Image 1 (cartoon, one colour):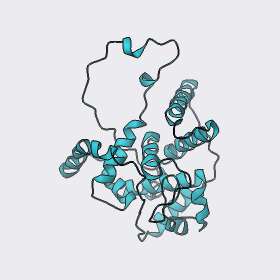
Image 2 (cartoon, rainbow, N blue to C red; image 1 turned 180 degrees about the horizontal axis):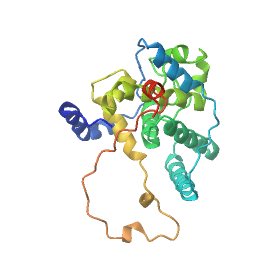
Image 3 (spheres, rainbow, N blue to C red; image 1 turned 45 degrees about the vertical axis):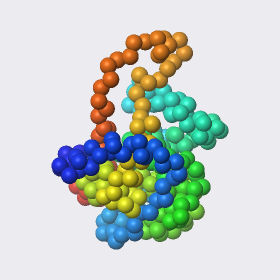
Image 4 (tube, rainbow, N blue to C red; image 1 turned 90 degrees about the horizontal axis):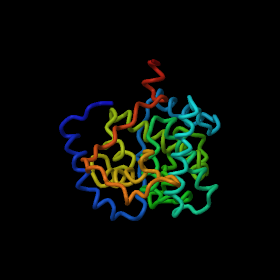
Length: 251
């Protein structure tokens, strides 16, 4: 991950001041990615990432890793219950977010935050800019790197595949600068409002096992709280395994 230069540090430090403002943004942001010319190698790499039709089945290296995933899945389902009451629909969304975000080298909590800001978890949301679905993907992407069938933007996995691949592409273009990549995703590169909103939503979906209460655990209110420490912003995601750079120079 690239260490931000001073201007980038200043932009990110301004996020904290914008969190309160971001919480007031209740409606989904209209996605407005801008259509840009793509090099043939980039277009080919993105198209290959979109066309990969492997089933949504994460692989785990150990039983403990799988157990950690199941705990995360249960906690995310609990948090999302008020927004999506149907258990099957809710779990399918969370499982697909996990798979597609990990596949693109993104944090699932970031993608969940992006879904919240973009579509407020509405599968069939359409913005005033004609962006569609959960992560509000613009139809031109389907014509550019897909098969041209824009109806697929209302299919859960297809939409998240496009959204995660596009964000990963923007991160590569911005050399890992998440602030600029998020702005580019929204068509507002360099402005703080949209990154601030995603940042606020992202923190709501972050997870650690210490935050999960299990039946039989002590009452959290009865436990002496630990000293409050200054929050450290999460690191930007790792590089995209499907990026043109990786395909040209595999490591």
